[in-house]
Image 1 (tube, helix red, strand yellow):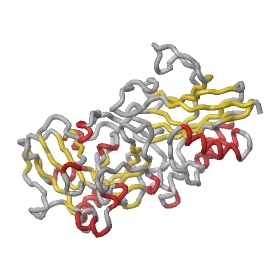
Image 2: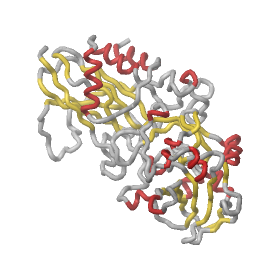
Image 3: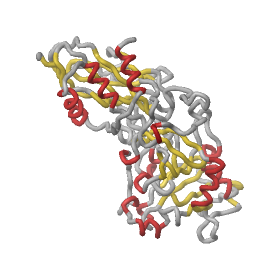
Image 4: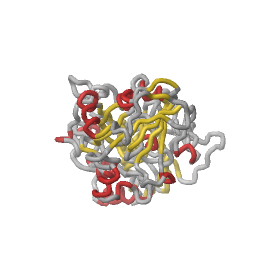
Length: 421
């Protein structure tokens, strides 16, 4: 068994917490420098780095993007109770858009007393609850916010309670915004996506749990939207209102901010661990994560080049560079410390019920870890290290969708110094 096979096996036995914090190159270098100072050979250092990883991000470690003045998650418990951000007072209204001719037979409103409440949602959950793993990523941030196991009720079950009849092409939705229309953050979906899931995709859900725990105010409690294949702007927090409309264009807040609101998750790689410096003759241990987007993942690759290396302008994505394959690590036995004994509850759509193993690996719309020990053949000097993915269609990052505003997926670079001693 090769050294990397052993390291991959160690990854399967994850027991220690490690927050998936993919910050700046300098931040990663500091982390790597601490590990390097501990001494030992490169494979042992890589094993140590892998042993600190957990597949699912702990709830308290999620990086949450929250908007509003004040941000709703910072409200006092009494205020959350007052404004409907507590299960005891939460209501979800489902109405037609007064500015279009959409028709529904059973509008669900607070005024009529038939808005969906917490008990109603939990009644639906007893019959229809689903769970799936999904990475949360902001459209314009080149690093994931966290990887979670989400649980909720498919949105379509609630839409059908309102009995839509005709002229419904989209649904837009928003959460609590401090009773200030100027602070509203809303998103939208085609009604077709809500009512029917693409092959192999999970339903859009009204989510109430993350990693087996009730949502916290920070993560969108008591209920948020979760759209499995989309960036986080679609997964609106502190949800309170659904509006069925005949508008044919996205009327998302993100659309007014010059973003592509319909972009699916992109496939790309990021570093977790790269040393600032190594001695000549030592191997270079590197770990990272890859986001598995709509086009899946075939491989992760790395490239190390001397600093200052010039490159042809007609090859902006380094397709002719000397890329090498890293190892995509297998599924872990323990998925995260938030879960009892690190074990997942049943997820029939992603896992085999008989074996408890993923039906496919990597799983689309999630993260996967990767690792490599680069042989110690680099001469003393300064280097630039890059990583990229190749998707299941054989297309290398950042293609096929390199443009910004539809998901950041640029090739990441970090610096490495090889010393004489």
